Image 1 (cartoon, rainbow, N blue to C red):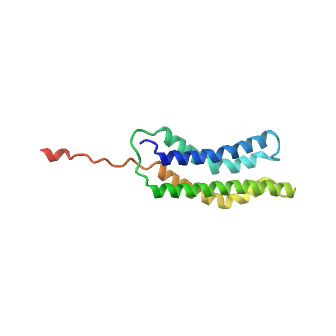
Image 2 (image 1 turned 90 degrees about the horizontal axis):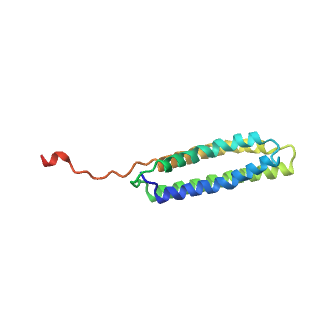
Image 3 (image 1 turned 45 degrees about the vertical axis):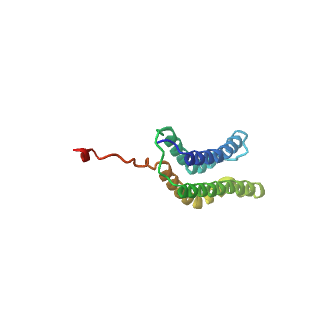
Length: 149
């Protein structure tokens, strides 16, 4: 199955949202701005990597036939994706702000709390995107071979 334009748009959305946050975490890790980077990466990786890998694998394996996923389902996936990424960014932003204003609340503490709702959202988004990206090609009408006999 070929990657459809909506699949490409969702992949661009996800990779486009992942890139700046990943870059921020990489810079924070390398410059020691993250006081303890291991828990931050342990928080971030399972919330983002599985979905990105699903998209990459599906796009890579795409063949020539379009998928049967509809416009409504694409819009649903896009809305869920935007909301999920907004929640990820807000969680990191809130954690950085809390860490800057309260030395007793390090970033990993806030991220751990955020996982309570992000894990649920990630499950919903992952399921929706998985179904969207793996929708089989539309069944092509094939003439019945026995009809001519």
